[in-house]
Image 1 (cartoon, helix red, strand yellow):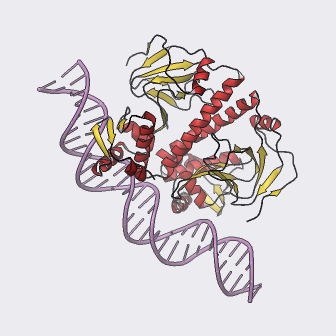
Image 2 (cartoon, chains in turn yellow, red, brown, purple):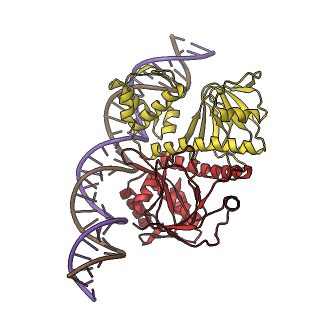
Image 3 (tube, rainbow over the protein chains, first blue to last red):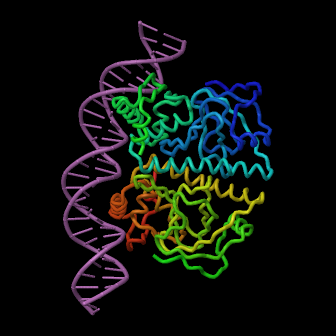
Length: 214
Length: 214
DNA sequence: CGACCAATTGAATTGATTCAAGGTCCGTGG
DNA sequence: CCACGGACCTTGAATCAATTCAATTGGTCG
């Protein structure tokens, strides 16, 4: 496993106004590169700075004592993670693919809390949907919902990239990885999607996907 | 269904420092009483003030278009709810039993955001555990975890009060209400708990409960 | 090419749900 | 005071969705 290499400071591509002003007030460090499956911080680690994803994907997950894992969220370029209460991280963060991460030192001024609150509330809304997904959806619905989310985020037409592997998807959706595979097959058989490759899906029928969603 | 009746302003019993200072800065209204199963705000309603539970229990839930319901949290005395992003509530809030609720007008000063952030982050940690519960636990584990939570909150020795009915528990844990009933029976048969009445449980063996938990 | 890891697929199993039938509790009205 | 109705809870039996276990295929890297 490689050590994260420091990359020179580059102009960030982040668009979100909340995040931009967060950066403006937090003396952002340079971007460090985390190769696939490297830990950014671990469960139980001392709480540190915030992190901003510049490129790549990060998974934030919580593992129970007996090894069961629940992925709370996948963070993509522009997402901020690492904000937690208390002095220990309750979750861990790992790069999924190669990811470029910038650390943001928390400032102590008033506007900063406002900005953080705004971000926290946004995450909140996402998490609430995730609760509904985990608690009340079937495997097919979970998967459809996940794919639509990705398609929406990536905004690359009919093509969805899956930077994470089946196991990660499973732990995100509360399924087994075999089930993830099977559901994809079902969608394929119904001509809703086409598996261009393991990590690349073409959506043939968004309507059907939305119907399968709930 | 009764209209909420206004009760005279009474000294709040809230302990939490964050909440107390929140109150100090937000001209709290008087306590209104919401009889069992009355709506405090509905899904899609315009976002309004924050709410503080003075007594009783409130459920915050999200219902999907086809009627499936996921209860996000039960709020008890001292809990604040109603904080959401955007101008529409994504969730609804209803009293479970009779509940006394105080509205808190959000102030625009700096400290306020700080306090809200602190509360939001706390909820965050809870929700993360709930994600793990919904996504990765068996029915028995969910129930054990729920009971331990209640016992911990209520701090009334071996006795746990269940202000909510089976259906609510089910929608909180992502189960069917029949399963809730059955799991309680399993615990009873194992002499882990005793059902003093429908809404009153005596814990006979905390260790076994903790073991069943995960 | 072989080794290794990920993904797929099949078969058997199981945990939880659904459907259906009582049972309990409580308030209301005769 | 007791009978009745309704809401909630419990329990059983059948079903089903998803998991587990196992075998195979596919892709990647040295």
